[in-house]
Image 1 (cartoon, one colour):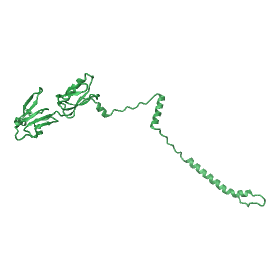
Image 2 (cartoon, helix red, strand yellow):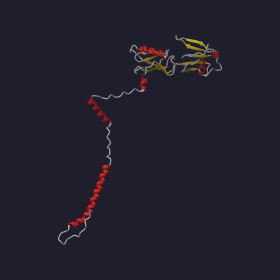
Image 3 (cartoon, one colour):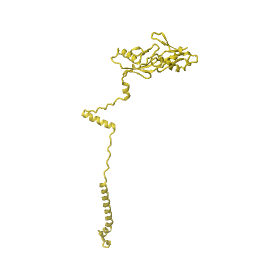
Image 4 (cartoon, rainbow, N blue to C red):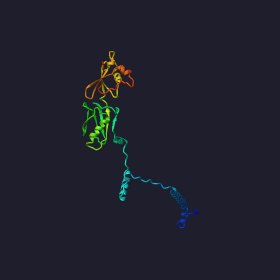
Length: 267
C-alpha cells in the first residue's frame, strides 16, 4: 500500500512523522518482500533436495574378526576353520609303490655301477639313491648291505621288504633304476671300433657289430664267438657264425641277445 507523500511540517515546531514514514516505508517494504521471497525459495529447495546417504564404513578384516570372536565367546560357539584339501603333488609323493624303472624293462637284471633309488614310503631316512658296488651289493640305513646284482627290480624289492620286516610290520618300498651303467659289452678282433661299448637296451649280436662299425676286410665272420661269464665265474664260449645268424629264421634264431659283460671276438 502506497502512502501519499506530504511535505514535512517544520513551521509548527515538530516533524511530521507520518510524512517521514511515508517516504521510508516504500523501500523498506520492498526489502522485506525481497527477503521473504528469497527465504521461501531457499526453504523450498532445501525441502525438495534428497538427503545424501552416508556410506557405511566397512569394518576392517581384523576388526570384523575381533567382533566375530567376541560374539562367539559370548555364545560359546566358534566357527570351525575350513579344511584345505592336500595338494596333488603331496598325494603323488605319498602314493605307495612296488617297483619302477625309468630306463629299463621290469625284467632288467641289475648289475654293478647301476644307480638305484630305494624309496620307503613315509620314511625319508631310509629313502636313498645308491650305486651298486663292484661286489654287487648296495648299502642302506638300518638293514646294511643287500645283494642287488643279478636281481630284477621286483626281486630286489622283495628282498628289501623282507629285511625291513625285522624292524617294522609293513614296509612299502619302491625300487627305481635311475641309470643303467652295467650293460657293457666288449668287442675284440676284426671290427672297426673294438673296445668297451655302453648299452642302454637289449642288444643282439648283429646290433653289436653295427655299433662297433662293422667288420674289417680281414675278419673271419663265421668264426665269431661270444665269451660269456657263467654263474660260477668261468668263461663259456658260444660260437655264432655270421652266416648262420643271417640265414636263420624265427624257429632257429641264432641272433642271440647279449648279456652285460659279454665279449664278442672276431678272429
